[in-house]
Amino acid sequence: MGPIERLREQQRQRLQAWLDPVVNWLAATAVHPNLLTAGNVVFSVLAAWLIIGDQLTWAGIVFLFGSTLDMLDGMLARSKSQATPFGGFLDSTLDRVCEGAIFAAIAWWLATQGNSWAVAALVLAMLGSMLTSYTRARAEALGLQCSGGWVTRAERVILLCLGLITHELVFMAFVLAVLTLWTAGQRIHNVYRHLPSESEEHEPT
Image (cartoon, rainbow, N blue to C red):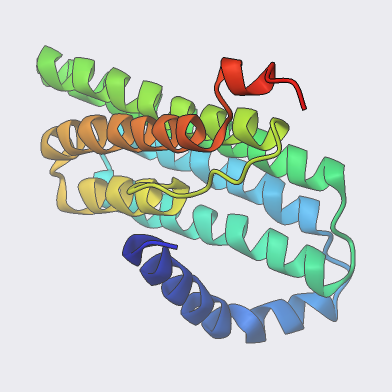
C-alpha cells in the first residue's frame, strides 16, 4: 500500500468514526440502505438543477450531502447485516448516474459561459472518471484488486464540491481531466504489472 492509499485509508477510518453515531441511529430505525442509495440520486439531481439555476454554492453543499448518504448506505448495510451483491451493484451503478448528472450540469453551465475549452476538459474528466471505475471492475473480474490511484470517487466528489462552492469550475475541470485520466493510467499499469504475459500463460508446467 502506497502513501496515498495509506492516507486515504486513515481519512476513511476517521470519517467513519465521525459517522458511527449516525449509523447507529439509522440502524435502530426501519431505514433500508437502498433508501440512502436512492437519496444520493435525488440530492445529486437536485444539485444538478441548482447548477443550471446558477446556484453553484448551494449545489456544492447539496451534492456533498448526497455523497455522504452514499457512504452511509454501505456502513448501514454492514451494520444491519443487509449487505447483498445486488446492493453493491446498485450502489456502484447509481454512483455513475450521480456523477453523470453533475458533470452534465457543469458542462451546460460552462457552455453558457462560452468556455468551450473547459467543456472539452470536463468531457475528458468524465471519460477519466468512467475509465477509473471500469478498470477496477474489469480488474476485479480478473481476480485482481485495483482500487488505488491518485483520484478515486471520494476525491472526485471533493474536487467537484470545492469547484462548485468556490465557483472555480474552469480550473476544476482541467484539474479533474488530468487527475482522472492519470488515475485510469495508473490502474491500467497496475493490472499490466500483475497479470502474466501471454507467453507465461501458455508456458507448459
